[in-house]
Amino acid sequence: MDWTRAHALIRRSVPVPLAPRRRTALAALLAGSLTVGILVGASNARGEAAGPASAECPADLVGKADCYSGRDLNGAYYTMAVPDDWNGSLVVHAHGGPDLAPDSDPNRSRDDLRRWSVMVKEGYAWAGSSYRRGGYGTRMAAADTESVRRLFVEEFGKPRRTYVHGQSWGGNVAAKVVETYGQSQGAYDGALLTNGVLAGGSRGYDYRVDLRVVYQYYCGNHPRPTEPQYPLWQGLRAGSAMTTDGLRARLQECTGYASAPEKRTALQQRNLDDILAVTRIPERTLESHLRFATFTFRDIVHNRLGGRNPFGNQGIRYSGSHDDEALNAGVERFAANPAAVRDLSYDSDLTGEVALPVLTLRAIGDPTAFVEHEAAYRDTLRGAGRDGQLVQTFTRENEHSELSDAEYATSMAALDRWVRTGERPTPGSIAASCGVFDRTYGAGCFYDPAFVPSPYASRVEPRPGGLRWPAMTAAQERAWSRIEGVGIAY
Image 1 (cartoon, helix red, strand yellow):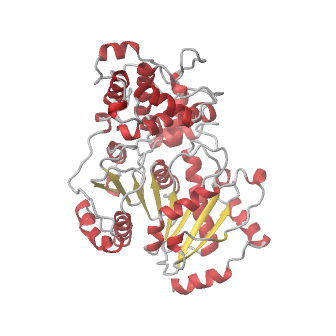
Image 2 (cartoon, rainbow, N blue to C red; image 1 turned 90 degrees about the vertical axis):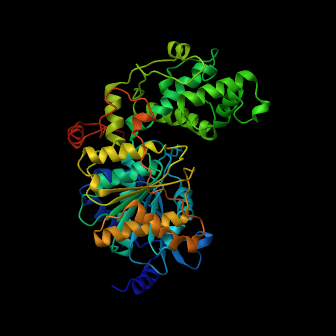
């Protein structure tokens, strides 16, 4: 097919908004799918949604692509872009977070397109969902990612090849897409996971559990003794009016983290030193990790798990402080609720059952989703006998949210070549090809082909069973899927 000509025809044919007949056909298509409960379960409550309408492109794509936006039948806003020089393939993007607003944010997918415009500049069409609601829910986000792929196919035709890309928590979402929808012939051809939370939910947040209890041991202000008390695994009590500004103020009060070292009191400095040494969290992301261990934990516990506790720290030996004995004697301890662990695991853990090529890109110094997440994912696929489908690359960068555009372009080209030729690349061959793309983007190439991450347990003290990967086997997933109400509701 002449994709340039096809795109010209597409641009002339897209109505704004779609005609009712087209919307009805789309609803029928989705309603007839095997995943009707997942993809259109909320359609009766939401009502019919119009198809993609023409939208303004990000500034760096003006004159280079046509952009569209819309809302799917489950209420998820989405954005799409088709470049003028479309190569015929599609990148479906899964965003990170999770955002905690109650409803879908129309600006999220627009902002993601701006941030990932490098994909469109490289000739790929792009589609991203804002997800139907905020809050935790990996399978929900995966279903909404699959929904936007189907909407793209309905509107623009089946691409030559389709790749799913996930960043941060979106890496967990995209990996779930690979396992859940990647088994279908022709749905997806490969995946790119960048700085992904690849240890899954039941283990991937244990270092934030540790932060929550270690912080409270030293600071005693979250909650204060004069405030209503609650178990720390809740993150925050359900009815609390605490804001992010309020949390920052308490963190500053205890540690002086936002002040220059010479402006901190001796107690603040010692508190800060002990918290960082024990948890091994970088100082520059301490506040964001504590925010997650407060507000996102509250969402997981109260909004998604009915108040049940999926986290535990019994038997964990904390070390690195000025007085480990006192810390371990005084830190709050708790045991996880097995049913809550099961539901969080079913929602977000990975089985390693991967049937298509997966390429990962990770900053060695990622201060948010530590590089050891890659070891967890490697061991997950190895445990499932699928590690031949995985190639991992690492860079000498220290950022989480944004790596070099040259590296993103390199990664997409390497993945596409792998899919087209069947020849599995190596970290060295990928690194060697980056210079070609850097001549366009000038963002730098920082690959370290020799790097191998240490086991996940070297960074995070494992809970019982935490040395076995995958955290959820394919057999467990099948068994749990037969239990009514298992997992996290959409």
